[in-house]
Image 1 (cartoon, rainbow, N blue to C red):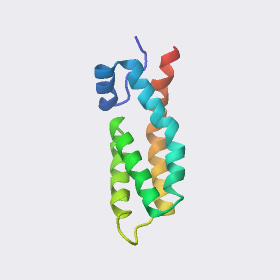
Image 2 (image 1 turned 60 degrees about the vertical axis):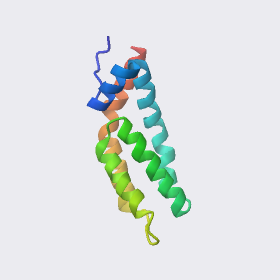
Image 3 (image 1 turned 90 degrees about the vertical axis):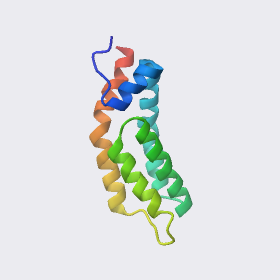
Length: 114
């Protein structure tokens, strides 16, 4: 049995329904994909950035990162507007929120080899 419990109720539910190993894999994919999606948020045209915000919104929701998911929902909505853009403050806040939640998620994922 793992000594590091799921870091939130969404991951606990994933562990219960899919099994702990599959839940860890999903969390690991979320963590590993973040740098790519962050890069997509800061480059490309508005539609590419909107798709990146949508993707991060969905994956953050699945792993229980509700603040990050909500931030991406707002950004996605803004990017549907003709003047909608991603600002440096948006990127900084996104990184800060990811950093706030990532430690506990990494600890949960690392337990797979323990």
